[in-house]
Amino acid sequence: MLLERGPFAGSKNMYGGVVYPRILDQFHPNWWEEVPIQRWITRRSTMVLTATQAMTVDFRTQAWGEPPYNGATAYRPDFDHWLAGKAEADGAVLVTSTTALGLLRDEAGRIAGVRTDRPDGDIHADVVIACDGVNSFLAKEADLFGPGQTEAGNYTVGVKETIALPKDVIDERFGVRDREGVDIEILGGTGGVNGGGFLYTNLDTLAVGVVLKLPALGAQPRRPEEIIADLKAHAAIAPLVEGGTIVEYSAHLIPEAGRSMMPRLTTDGMLVAGDAAAMCLAAGIWLEGVNFAMASGIYAGEAAADALRAGDTSAAGLAGYERRLGDTFVLRDHEKLRRAPGLVLSDRVQHHYPQMIANVVERVFRVENPRPKPGFRRIVREERKRAGIGLRDLARDAWAGIRSFG
Amino acid sequence: MVLVSRRPEWPEISFEERIGTTRFDVHERAHIVVDGSVCTDCSTRECIVACPANLFVPTADGGIVFNYEQCFECGTCYLVCNREGAITWTYPEGGHGVVFART
Image (cartoon, rainbow over all chains, first blue to last red; front, side, top):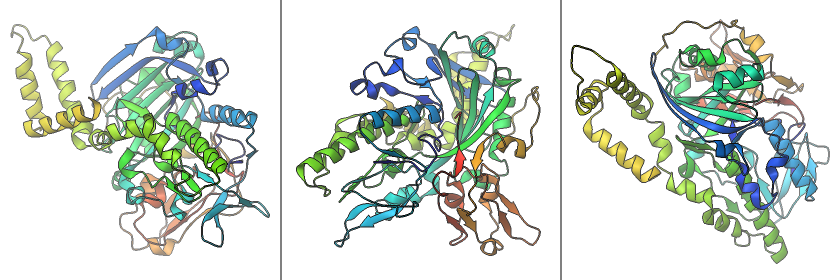
């Protein structure tokens, strides 16, 4: 049985904007023929912004516009609705408009189902899989939460405008055709609040927004919609979004700290998956979550089925879940990148390096005849000092970066 | 840092218009309750700036009024709040609250 508190699966879900569905290969071959996506990402841009500068690394490959594809923009209410339909086709019973209020326990105190807000809404179950999102009250009630999950500093809030523009205008502005799409990730552009910006192309809308670190957001005066307005007004962004009308405004929390904030994932009669298990990968150049949610849900389901067949749904009987997570990208990527979130959200990466990089590039390409060109090394040294970055900090961050991403 | 650039050409919209683009099927029960009396001696008031739905409004007498109706159910408020007992946070009744469509 699949419980959904919204009127349909996906109605409560919002995200930055790119899904990577290759995990579906083994379960739904040729999923791309029916998945309700907006555009296939064939252009991936990483943009570094300062108040008056922008430096973009722009990559394009036509390979990502053909099967098996790579990433896609999609509306979660469409995508998740489709995915829930797949579960139904495989025998799951989807019950919508039903909120799980808490856990049921048997006489021995073992988790034995959930209490819902339906009349006579107790649902007895041998295994509960808590995929109740970033605020997971079920994992909390089961005492699985780690200390990191109650720490505001481990979260960002993502705030987003969906902006309508005609498809041909989007195609022209972003240099794409048909179902090709663009994913722009932005470092800087969030004012004094650490975080980042994003701009994604849907078919006939754009998704533009910011990700803002808590609790810092609350300790400064700019509200999220004002920070988005500043980003949209930037000289590098304004021409891309101009003239569009907002057709939806949305927000969602993001668990940012990865492996270090994950809860215990298994207890007698219960598993924790997806955002509830803090499985978002916020590693700067990689920003993923929907794939981790899908995979952890699949592995939780498989482990639960194994446990039921073996007649042992204790934590030991459910051990197949964490074994699968550990054997696959779900925990491997998180283990490997466990230092990345702290680095990405550090003040140096957020403010000092963008300023230094932009200034270096500006000076490299500035022609100041009759002065001869300064050497590259000299420019870097001067701009590093000007941005207030010590050599030791630079070395330490480089080492942390190599250990995470290398 | 305030970004320096020309203001581009699109109509400025009010917050009411902005949040009016999102669908909310409001239930009669308030799923989040704020005890404004706890807030009177709070000097930091992170919720007022941080709530993306702009639901926390300071009052003249130093309290805070909260309106649950157009809530994203995101959880930002209880995470940034430092005051025990100020915010009682639950999800709305099944089928109610925010209903996203294009995000």
